[in-house]
Length: 347
Image (cartoon, rainbow, N blue to C red; front, side):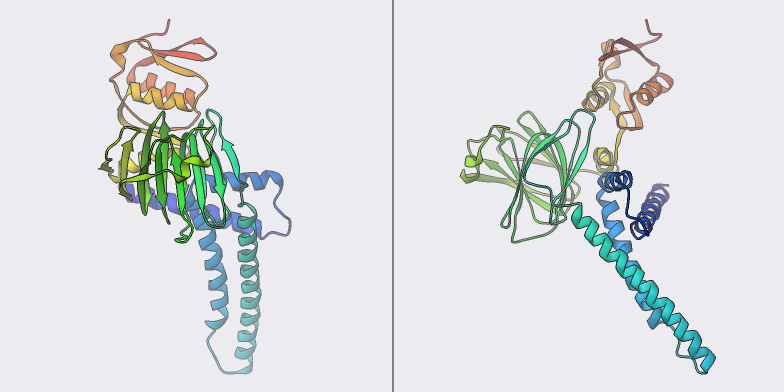
């Protein structure tokens, strides 16, 4: 069943990528609304950008090969048919080549974020595209500072959580600084969640090295002086692994994540929160990260109740409906910013 769902998801992404490519190659340029929609679609997942690029290249190659695949039949009528087919193939190849060039130009135009500080408010997400094709997807209530140059790619995570998809460039390091830690990657994808002085690093692709900065902690007011401080390597993480460490860490404890848990943990970058038996207290903590309205548990006996479900980020009403219908947990709005959860009928 999981394979069927994954196949349907891939098929949907491929269909959407084809539709965007056709619109990019249309007679009229994309409207501002369409540009925003395409950027939003690209920001949902790195697989969207990869699929759009892949299909563009495939169309170009397939249409060029159309001309070469015409059989060398004999006879003037057959030669005329071949000639017409060659002309059609040439036109199709020209269109495909134009689409590929246009897509390349658009993607480059959509990259190149300037150095500086970027942030999101509670409930917001943002994707920052770097000139080399790497991307930074900020989760809710997060902030990064970008220092991108010809010899380095240095990111400071000042608050919250971010997913980094790194284009391989072995001669130009990609380093993420957060609290007193450094995550070093060459070509990989990984997330970093900063909670106080604690770092939670999860790798979805490739390998990263994790180090500790001696006597320094990265904050919004930090200058570049921490760069030259001594570092101590704590360990290495590969795809499907996670680790938590902080200012008093002597070593990192690496934990393997099964595929379902990894997908659940990373569901936020596709706009969802997924729970599979987590206690209500943890569910409430996660939901509160994405909403200006705070949930709190009025009855302590409800805290350990195991909750499961898949929810669109920001759809608080859907979460409350599921808690009521499936778990018998009612909600009462105290004021505009607070909702309490309790067993039985609301007051």
